[in-house]
Length: 440
Image (cartoon, rainbow, N blue to C red; front, side):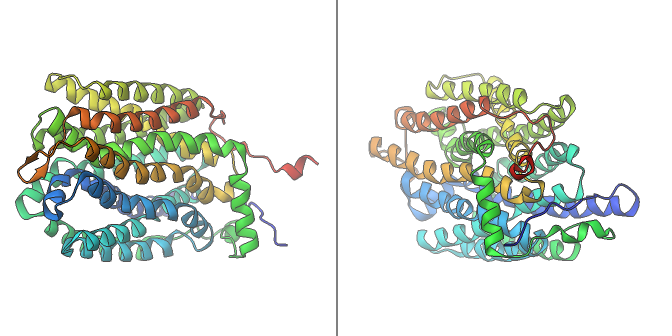
């Protein structure tokens, strides 16, 4: 049976090689920003989609969640592909598929076609994040992993910021369909840029050549099983599930109608809340990564952030009218604290074999998308149960009581993440994996 061996990896240190790694990281980060925009775009145009397809809350949830279902299914295969085929190939293929999905979504005459387009978008962009983490793991020093990841998060989340106020205003100006037609072209251009500029690993050092695993099914699935059966993998995975699942479900779809229908904000003000949240996640992810690397601790940073995030969810259960400045500040804190989930990737990577960084981060990333895929339509279904038949401008209107049970379900998932953060294994910002056979 073939063996997995960890090769010596020597990331480039300076000069042309150093400039090269930042250039390729920049291209991959642009693809990541585009994938983040696609993830949260339904939040900014939720009311437009509801009007265009005459959907109930449950149907709107299913439409938005189709992205998360395929994204969830692809997480582990993406980790395997990143460790075997390499990031460059999967970024090209993913970009082409995403471009096709955006084109179909923009032209969709009905809900079924829109769901297919949204599914293709999710399939295409599902490879981007894990490919980016693989690039970081191979091109940058291990001690800088969380910091560099934080930098990519803060830049990538500009895509999320654009999915707030800018998308809402642009859709009102030119129409949401035209936005998606333009996205098809942008996705294709970014895919071609990745193919032209990205390289899977540093070159020029013989020690780096064997980094890619041969696609031997026995070896690959054995490696994946070693990540899954590692008990230390599960705390970061559940931590990610709780925080990401609740974030994606709420801010990815329901926050906008919650703010307009329950709190009475205009669409512009509600979209500004989303942009503030996304910007805060970007800043928080960067700061937490830097701070965690500097103090050489993962767990305390993750726990404090998760506790604050969980506490804010309790406020959504009892919606109280706040002055606008205070409401903005609360969403900023919500984003800053929720960004603690970004440490889950480093925690998962550091308790598994370094060569399996793609698989370990993809396993940790899996639950958040699965939780969002379940929660988005489930929250909509619960809201439909309480709907009293009111329509406003041809769309269903839901009050605070309609939202309460849905908010409770998302809050429980968030607190599951808090509990998992408390159970994280401290790594000291270094890889602590040990081959069990080495002690025999």
